[in-house]
Length: 477
Image (cartoon, rainbow, N blue to C red; front, top):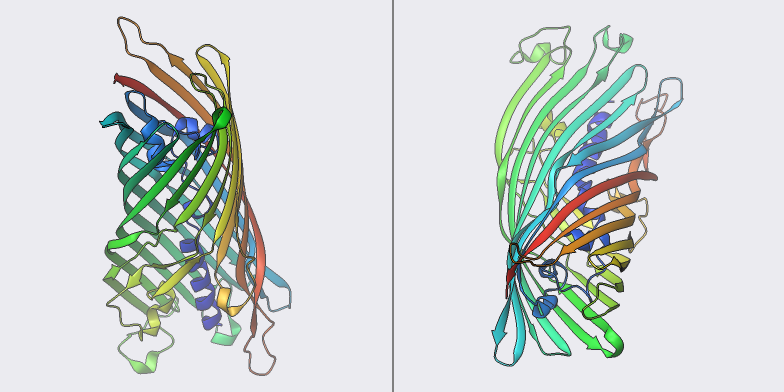
């Protein structure tokens, strides 16, 4: 029985590591861009082009400072039956997994300005992007009547991306390059407990319990370049192409600490006395350094759209493909893995597979007044492969997202007393659909008491809502 719960806890911890909120979506950066669901690969030449397609920087008309912040974001996900078992009466019992939380950003601050490169038009930009900053609260519980387990975790993740970009070209074409330094910090507090919750007659009336408290502090740094192309076609049509390379790992380190209790709390004994085992309360306190690596997924996106020069009417259809990647996570370097008394604290090497994915997005923008526009965006992102329940895929999770965006923008013309500026709002709602491979335990054998297990695929669901406020201030040519 103890082996069953230790494996179950390993499933849950790995589940939490796979449930990074950024894995199911492209980063939401920029106010106009979120209102168009990111469909700006061909027709985007605002400062946020440094993130979506740096070739758009070549079409900058004036210098500007662009700011955007996520005023509100809430996310929730559920997985039912990630671990299934049977109680003593043969009744099936399922775990219930839930995660929810608030993300305080994404945000961006970008300074962009036009350049003169001989006969070529050109533009450059530098800024700080914050595609993730917030925390989730994740809970998983299973109650068999006699035996119960509870897992509670609060991971907080912050990602900062200093970026610089350059775009140049002629009337019919433009090229761009951007360098992104990705700094990710993960702070995580988790609590786990399992054990008997009523008298265990098979253990002389003693109640067995495990408890573990774990703290993780990891920082990773990687560098990823992106390149872009925009072509001007007849009748104000544009074609865009952008590619981001997988991140080059530069640094990854941190520490993991844990306190673990194991044994029978209603019996006190001396752990150094071998005759008193197992009727004992076992205690471990461990802190160790760790190495970590964050492998970002490279991607390719292409867009085709129409945008009238001098007017604020535009629409675009964008499609993208994200490469598969293996992401080792929290690789602990100096823990004695033979210490079985701390197995369930999850000190050990493991890797998370990020499957290939595809996406499609449509954005539409319409000028309804001389200074006002409205925006509408639709998008869907799906993993490219189905998740098959097998030993090779156990603990894995993949999430898809379907989103609707609406936006509003207003531009104020320059006057003798103030510079030209713009204000933009965007609201986005996403439905999340998930798949996971969990464990189903069979009923214990009447003779040996051992239980066999099989892998199963379970479905999950959730939603995300975010509200973005932003604007820009013209700084001149």
